[in-house]
Amino acid sequence: MYKIKLQKIFFLALEISAHYKKSYFNTNDLVKLANQYKLDLVRTRSDKKDYKYLDDTKFGGLRGNFSTLITLKGFVKRGNQIVPFYSLGKDGRIVNAISNGEIILDSSDLSANLTNERLKDLIETEVWLSKVREDQAHIKVMLEKNHTELGIRRDNDNFKKDSVVVSNKGQYFIRSLLNNFVGNGNNIFEYSLYNYWSGKKIFKKNIHPLLVIPSKENSWNEIYAVKFEELFEKQPMFLRVSLDSKICTDRIGNIYNLYSLDRALNDFSDGNANINSRLSYRWEELKKRECTNETEIQKDTKQQESWIFIDKFLKGKKNFSIEKKNVIDLSISSSGGCDVLLKYSGGTVQRLELEHDWKNYLDHKHHKSNAWSNAWLFAEQEWDPDLIIKLFQPLKEEYGNRIPDVFLCFDNGQRKAYRANWGEQTFSELHLVF
Image (cartoon, one colour):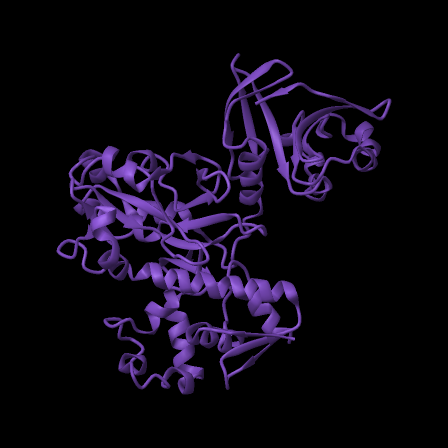
């Protein structure tokens, strides 16, 4: 059996998880539920009186503590408003495990007790992430120790409640919120830019987001920045950083340059720049773009597939050669049809579908739609020619060019491409140059 000690706020959120009525919630929802069902836990902090007054946020109250715990998923319509929605952890596995009896909570020592090793690893990761978010929320504490070395300081006059800092050259930066890991390998961090785009901060100053990559020992281990000028056209709500390659993209695969803090202090624009762009910015329009009418937490399977293709197969580069034809760019679609359009130097394009497993192409019924005619297929699953023949060859005669002929893949860890000869049930390797 595993016993994992939890922070009080994490334990409180799990204790009230049986009362989550929606698949989306925010800190207001959690505060109301805590006040309704767990006053015994809420009122145990005699040294911090604001815990008794759940609507009080002036002194790091319950809302603020919950905000360092939950993961932003997106935006949803609630009545006439557009509000952010969250999960406890990167998905619902921890909450579901409590509901199913796989995790038993012990209020005597604020622990989670379980036997499943994968759940143990998941909870321990969330405990660590919560600590990192809490540490990064207290940017003043970090700066008191390091402001001379880093060359930045808090701007309390213009931004009293935001983690905004200013350099000696008048450049402004805001610490982005560490959202969670993406995928199962714990090697891709996602950051929320909710606190960057929301409100009126951009109208006050030309600001650049900071992305802080923590280590197990240091919540402020590596500090990077992204330029306002590179972000403004796409206005992504989330950015992702590969811990291996340090490649930065948004959820649909657009790539952004990641700069060290030292370089940013030398090269980035100051707080008075980009006035025309800032005047044209509208937070309400961005929220509408991000909003979904669904009240269920959206799965980001396709976004993970895009990341795997860009980060692992292309290694962050958008140009390569296949069969002596040069791909000079690619675009990733967020809805409808194939996931990727590869753009050749001659002006033509090739459609490419991305999947985790080879059979997913058929599971999703792509072979029954003309939108996938003449498409190529990439999958994260290891190359297995016998499996490809078994899955696709029986369908080739009926569905014709909706069954892919070209497969991009990993073969014994190497990046490869193969073309099928369905009549002979063989494959020929295509020449790839990266």
